[in-house]
Amino acid sequence: MNIYFQKTHQRSFGTYPLEGEVLMNAIAAAAETGYRAFDTAQMYGNEAETGEALAATGIARDELCVTTKVHPDNFGEADFMNSVEQSLKSLRMDYVDALLVHWPPVGGDIAPSLRLLQKALERGLTRNIGISNYTAQMMRDAKSIVDAPLVTNQVEFHPLLDQSILLRAASETGIPLASYSSVARGEVFKYPQFEEIGRGYGKTAGQVVLRWILQKGVSVNTMSTKPENIRANFDIMDFTLSSIDMDRIDALNATNYRIVGKDLVPWAPDWD
Image (cartoon, rainbow, N blue to C red; front, side, top):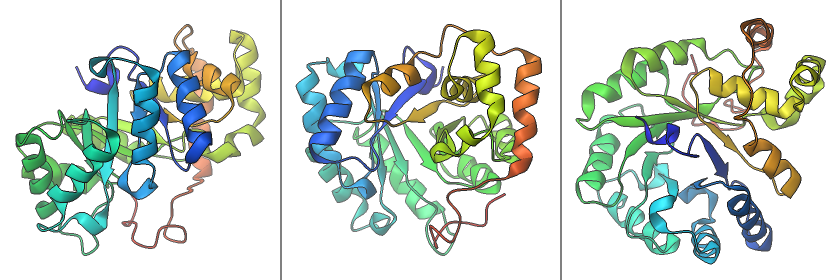
């Protein structure tokens, strides 16, 4: 079974763009709520604070599922391993549970960074490896490049964006998707359908969105600084959306509202 669908790991607490006391308090609240999966990245600049906050929770290391991601600037042979070792030092850990390459490299050749990712696995710096922001064709190529299983492709995923091509690639390659921007940075709350559906289950609009993502076979990353929202984002396992409600939400894919486009991230690939 994929690590992101074990225990509580299908609901991961994201740390971007938190830092300082706000990050420390948010992680403490998430841990108290029941989160055991936490997501950070070299690019976020908060690995050290994340490590400090996780250590302060007192949760045993083998109960945690910690993901970090290698910055594209560190994809070169000279920098990759050093950057991962620095990430571990910052996180106060001997290994991470999942190490991802954060973006496809500029220039398009994904093979060198993926081979270095596999070397990090072989050296014991991580228990699992994965990718982030890869297109469907890149997923197929990645599967043929590395010998080890790729446990995720972490991508923008929410009901307002049609990611059916990536879902098909996930089924084809066996590389599951994980979501970021799971509520489209609040854009989903402009659509009354979610609140209407939620009333039938005694759930909020946000909980309906996150449950829809899980029922698509996609693990969820969420971030909040408010304890009540942190708890609500976690409390999504006690109901199942009907096929009618799933179809109603699926129809919103046609909105094709994308947050992470080239205007925001100039080095992003040409999305499917």
